[in-house]
Figure 1 (spheres, rainbow over the protein chains, first blue to last red):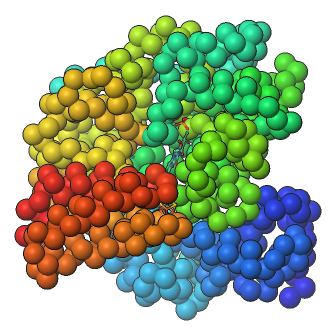
Figure 2 (figure 1 turned 135 degrees about the vertical axis):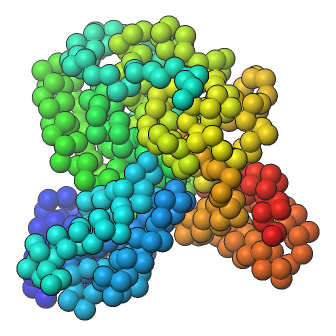
Length: 160
Length: 392
Ligand SMILES: Cc1cc2nc3c(=O)[nH]c(=O)nc-3n(C[C@H](O)[C@H](O)[C@H](O)COP(=O)(O)O)c2cc1C
Ligand code: SF4
C-alpha cells in the first residue's frame, strides 16, 4: 500500500502534523478512497505521532468517515421529518429498485452506496439527497431515475 | 393569502458596501463597537440566545497570548437551512463580523466550522474568503479565516464539542464552566457565534444599533431569519420581526389546516393549534403568554400528519446523534424511543407515558449538554398535547 502512504504524507504536508490536523487528514483520505481502513488509520497515527487508538476513536465518531469501503458515489438520502412528509419513502423505494441494494449496501459494480442520513438542510426542497458532495432536491421517482442514469452515463455504464 | 407579517430585507440585501462598512467600523474604538452591540440587543441566533456584545466583551477582557473567532456553520438542527443561505448569498457580512470581532478581542485567526453536508459551498466560500483577505490586507488588519469541515455529527454544533472536533478528537461536549470566553479552542479564549448572528453584526455596524433595536419586542430585538418547512405552500427562508404570535405566522405560512408547529427543530417545542394565539416567537423574557426562543426552524404539520410519527422521527434522530458520553442521554433517548413504540403496540398501558415524561424531565436535569437536556422539549410538548395519538 505504498500509494495510501503517499496520500497521507501529502495530506500531512498540506495540513500540518499537529493533532488539529487529524480531522482534515482523515477527511482527505476518505475523499480519495471512500474508506478508512485499519492500515490507513495506523499510517495516519504514525505520520502524526499519535496513538492508533486515538485515530480510531476519532474516526469512528463521525458518520461521514467510515471504515468499510463505499462505492464511488455515496448517496445520502435525507430521512428527517420534512423530507419524510414529502415522499422520502417513495424515493427510497425507487433507489432500491434501480440500484438493487438496501440502505448500507453498495451496488455490485462498485459505483453506488446507498445510505440514509439526518437533516441535509434542504427541508424546503424535500425530498433531498446528496451524491458525494452534490445536493439533489425536489426529488420525484422519475427525477431520481434520470439523476442515477446521468451518473451511470458519466461512468460509461448506462442502464440500457 | 393574508399577509400579517412584514417581510424584512436586512440580512440578504447586498449593497456592495462591505469595504465601506469595514473601514468605517475599523476606524472606531473597540469600546464603541461593543457598546453598539449591547445597545442593539442582539442575542445569539444559534439557539441559546446569549447577548453577543457581552460575549465579545468578556472575551476581549480575557488575558491570553492567543484567541480565536469561530463561526458556527454546523447547522444540523432538523428544519434549519438559513445559515446555508446566508453563507451562499452574503458571506462577506459574516466575514466582516468575524474580522471586527477579531480586532476587538485580539484574535488573528478565525475559523468557519462548516458541516460536511455543506461541502458544496466551499469553492465559492473560499473565493469570498480570499477576496476578503485582500480587503483586510488593504486595511492592514492582521486576521485570517480558514474553513474547518465537519464530518456528519450534529453534536459538533454544540460549541465545546466543536472545539474537541477541531482539536482532532471525538465531538464530545465538555463540562461548562469554563466557558469558551475563557477556555475555548485549544483552551484559549474564543468567541463562537452563529452564522446569522455574525451577519446581523454587519447590519448593526452599518445602520447603527437603533435601527436594529427598533425591530422586535422587549428582550427579543431585531429581525430573525426563519426556515419554514413542512405543510406550507411557501416553504423557504424568511426574515421576520421577533414578537409575532404563532397564529399570525400560521395564517401567513400554513396551508389553512395547521394542527401544530414545531418551533426550534427536534430540540424545540411543539405548539398545538389551540395555543397558536398565545405563543409568541422570541427569547424568554417578560412577554405576555408563552414565548419561545428559536434557532429559526419552523415545521408546520397539518391535520393529516401523525404526531406519533413526528416524535418517532425526532427520537430516532436523538438516538443517532447522542454522543453517548453521559448515561442519561445515551440510555434515555433509547428508552424513550422503545417506550413510545411499546405504548403504541399496546404492550404498555397509556400510564407508561407518564413514566416516560418523568424520564425526559430527569434528562433535562442530569444530561451533560444541551442535546440531552432539550430532548424533553419536544418529547413533553408532543406527548402532552397529542396524547391520544401516542396511544391509538
Ligand atoms: C446539540 C447542540 C447543537 C447545536 N448546534 C448548533 C449549530 O448547528 N449552530 C449554531 O450556531 N449553534 C449551535 N448550537 C449552539 C452553540 O452551542 C452555541 O451556543 C452557539 O453557536 C453560539 O452562537 P450564538 O451566540 O451566535 O448563537 C448547538 C447547541 C447544542 C446543545
Ligand atoms: S447530553 Fe447527550 S450529547 Fe450531550 S454529552 Fe451527554 S450523551 Fe453527549
